[in-house]
Length: 223
Image (cartoon, rainbow, N blue to C red; front, side, top):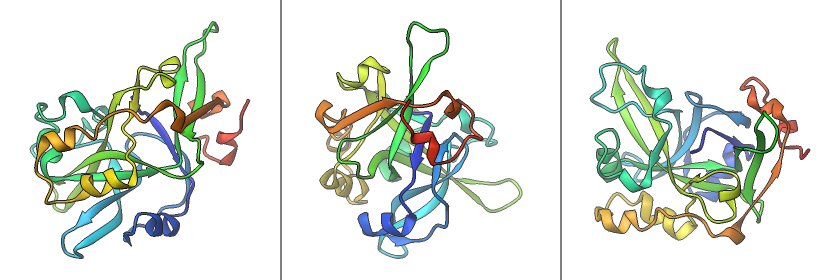
C-alpha cells in the first residue's frame, strides 16, 4: 500500500528530470495524503510530448456516478490491474508517473502505536511511481482528472515494514510505460515488479506525520 508520500523537489526541476512541459503549479509537499492535488507526468497528445500536470490522488473511473469513492481507490494492485473494471481501461490507455522523493509506511512494533518510517532511494534522487489516470465528467460540467498508484509485493528489505510497496520505474521503464504506442499488456505487466533491496533505504520519523496537517521539512527528520 502507499497512503502518504513526499514531493519536495520543485516542479521546474522535475520537469527537467522527466523531460516534460510544465503545466502544473504546486508547492513542495512533505505529507501528501489521498484526495490531494498532486503532480503527475503523462503523455500529452496535444503537445505531442510529456507534460507535468496536476491531478487528484484517488481514482474516479469514467463510468462512476459520483466521485465519492475516490479516497478508496488510491492504489491499484499490479497483479489484478488488467482484470479490475475500475483500472483495466486506464491500464491500457492512460498511464502516468507520479514523481516523489519518498513515501511513508507504518511499521508494527512492540508498542501499541505503529512507527512511521520514511522510505527513499539510496541515491537520494526523486523516484517515479507507476500510476494510471482517468478523466471523469462532472454532473455540473467540466472534468475531474484523478489517478492511482500501482503497488506490488514489497522487496525483501521493505517486507520488514510492510508487505506492499509502490512500483518504482527506472528511466528506461518510464519511457515504455508512458509510450502511447505500447499496447502489449504482457510487456507492461512485466514492468510492475519491486525495486531491488539495494536501491532503497528507510529510517523512522516522528509520529507527527500521522496527522495530515503536519506538513513541513521536519517530517523527514529521523528519530
